Length: 224
Image 1 (cartoon, one colour):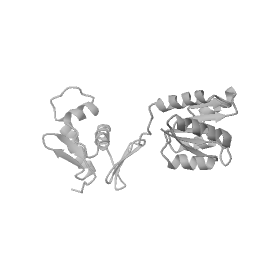
Image 2: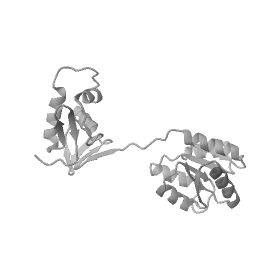
Image 3: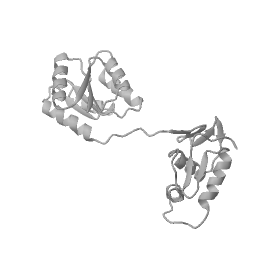
Image 4: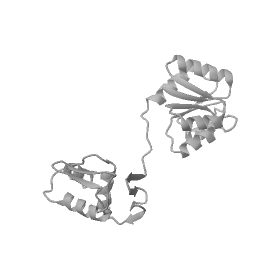
């Protein structure tokens, strides 16, 4: 696993780097908070270990800044500040775990491995795009080439289902279950009717019928 250690105490940093490397991890080290933030933002790491008291940018500010960038990188704080309020402050700033100095390396390694075993959460998109079509999931707004398209709630849900699966064939059964929550065939043309309405509103060939299979939406839609 790739670990970034941000620690300004040279002896402690060398000790942690050596121990984690011997345990099979790849470790990069930064001695300043500002450089640690830059490296963490630009690199691909599985875990960040960060001291609270750092030159350039303190650890709390570093982690808060990462969280503001929607980073879900697991964070383990190291600190000489081991009081209850200090630990709470660290966790509330976006840390996942907190270890007070001095510590035994075996405990550090156990905490590192526990964090690395956690399933990683990925930030969910708030905007979907397929070609000129753009869907704002927060504002519940759809535009094509910046022109707003007025959709009914079910039409919006149908388009969202398709836009989450660009260039993938979506069957009628998938749409009945995913959009209407039907786990049976209602024996109506409800899907076909809504697809037709949606096509007329987005005014293009974005939604294609795949004969005998279903529908797909792709980015090469052209005006009708």
